[in-house]
Length: 333
Image (cartoon, rainbow, N blue to C red):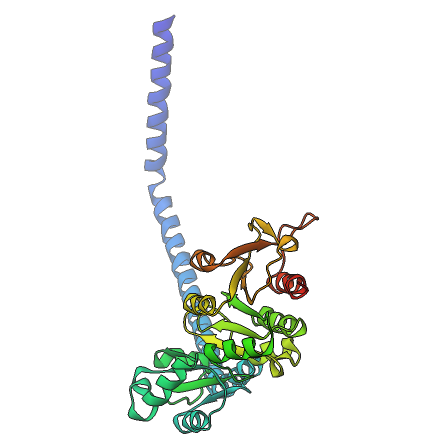
């Protein structure tokens, strides 16, 4: 039975192959005709598709040409509108750029917050001496590339130099110390460490003036300057409070300690609650940024690290709020 089934399968396979072969061989002429017909129809379709493709390409190229021509005609207007939009977004009322304009502003002894210039301008005889004197007064002068200055001024004709005016004049640290000691037996001075948000700086200045502090110390770097936003948030406090901009905050704290000031820092990790602090002496209150707090090097300069006891679930306070609460406690001692 097994052999017969194998033979039968073999015959079927052989028959299938032969039948397939015979079928293809018998219909050779017909397949050639069909192939000719298919080739002709395929050729016709290719021609039609090529014609349609050419039409589409012609139409798309014309469309692109129209768009390109349209964009070229509108580009200057769009560029000027974009420059105007950026200029409106950033308030340039306190900005001055251009060699002659900047030189006149520097020569007139106006309050300067910050200067940006190229290396060629910085090293020129016309500006070098002025820049050197301003650096000693705490003005931040930054050397930047021409492209960076163009970005800051949004493509204005800056000629390699630009500055931002300050909302108030600053005084030296020595002047601030003398003024504080001669006007109060136990003066309080606020020092800012790494507070770059102008709203926080303005709010702290407002609180410092409200609680009769004698001045605020702002470092040149890692801090917001006396911009228009700071003056607006301070709500007129800058007119009644002295501000000193220092090159190095830690050296300024050492100078204050030499002149009899106690330096206290505000930190959530402070071991002494501010309500339990009863020292009566000239004080310097150091306020750090919200995210990083007071830097480790500055903490080492502090005589005391004070904390504000919180009773709710909130783990920290805004820097300006913490400063206001601390000054309320310390000014009542």
